[in-house]
Length: 195
Image 1 (spheres, helix red, strand yellow):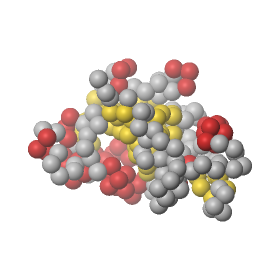
Image 2 (image 1 turned 135 degrees about the vertical axis):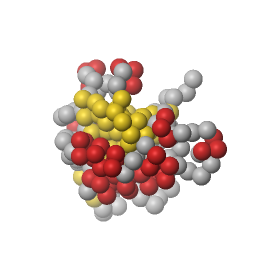
Image 3 (image 1 turned 180 degrees about the horizontal axis):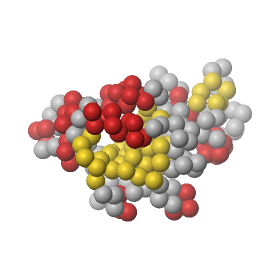
């Protein structure tokens, strides 16, 4: 059986960037979130060394209807079934990729990046990013890029504070990220993990 998860996180990750309690209040005020729910171990994502993050889980609210793609209601989806798991991984970022992971491309380019100078290849670049997620790469094209300035086709997550949406609802995640960015004052990114 395949599993699909969605993750929402700050585009430029650093520890304790978001005020989760304030964000939750604002999402509840707009009825994007409903009430809080108990969190079970099988819903959590383990961080480094198997540690579970500090987590809070909330039910989806009726305001999520505005973010459903047309036809979602016809498929029998009810936003009240959505679960939003707010996970805080402290000082060690959560990293995940699924079967849908692809190498990055430059913005508005179709080809995967092949030259990761001065790092060497993609593996070398990824190793540098895992040590320093806020790394700024001066690429051979003359531009500077942070990790999520590159296009990963939403198949990759790196974040200290991550919101897991389960089950993977058919939301317009770009629009949802824009709304959360307006609430937090920080650009937000999303990913889709297919296992």
